[in-house]
Image (tube, rainbow, N blue to C red; front, side, top):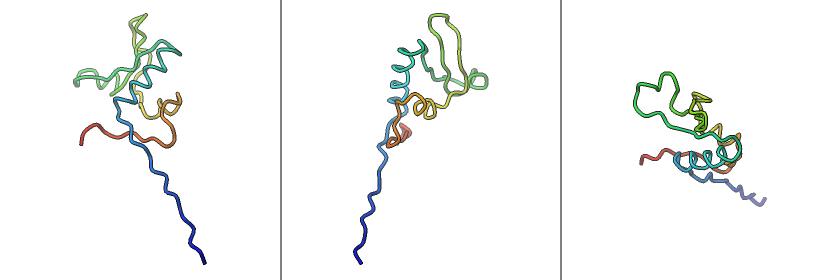
Amino acid sequence: MAKKKVNKVKKVPVTMRALIQRINRKLATERGYVLKTTRGGRWRGELGDYYAVDPKRNCVVSEYIEPEDLGRELGVLRDWEKVRSERR
């Protein structure tokens, strides 16, 4: 019997920084929001690692955002892409 070739689909790595840039471009056109990263530990408990801000009203509109989930929801992260950490 002939063996069938199984094509393993490799996922293309996308850095978190590139994903956040894609999300911000999409959010800016659709909702006018900006995705921000929490710096330091002071606000991480209240906002999480990532949060969305409305720059026109200068207020936080969403906390505890998972960028990979949001990217897939917005359609900026495709099925064949995966997020990799920026550290090597």
